[in-house]
Image (cartoon, rainbow, N blue to C red; front, side, top):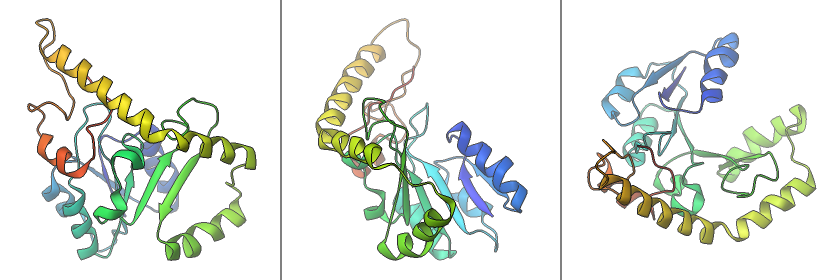
Length: 210
C-alpha cells in the first residue's frame, strides 16, 4: 500500500493506479499539506509515502520533517519528487526523506537535450534496491546522456537562482495587478505555507500560478 499526495504528475498517478495496481499495490491519495490525512490513510500494509513538493501547479509545500517522522513511526519509506526545487533549493534527504527522485530532463539538464531521471538515496538503499533492478531491467542511461546531464549540473545553482528571482518579480507584479484574483507562489506572504517554504527551501522556487 502507498499513500500519495493528490497533486502529483499525471504519469505518477497512472503508475500507481493503473500499473502497480495490476500487481496488487493499492494507493490512497491525500491532500499534500494535511499531515493528519496522511496518518489516517496509513494501514499495516503501507510501505511508502510519496509526494511532490512544491506541488504542481498551486505550489503547496509539504512539511518534510513531519512526514518523515510519520513514515519512520510506521516503518514506511518517504519518497520525495524534488523536480521543482532541485538539490539547489531543497535537499529532502537532509530533512528525513529516504529517497528522492528527479526528472533530469527538466531543471537538472536545463535545456531539454536528453530524457532521463535520477534516484537518490543512501548507499545501502541504492546498492540493495536500485542497482540489482537496473542490471536486470535495463533502465540504464547512455554515457553520452549522462555526460550531458553532468554538464547541466555545472550551471544548476546559477540557473535556479535566476529562475527564482524572475519568479518572485513576476509573482509580485501579478499580485498587485487589479485583473488578477490570486497568485500562487511561496514567496508571497499570502501563501499558506510561506514560512514553511522559507525554512525548508533555500529559495521559493521558479514555478507560479495565477
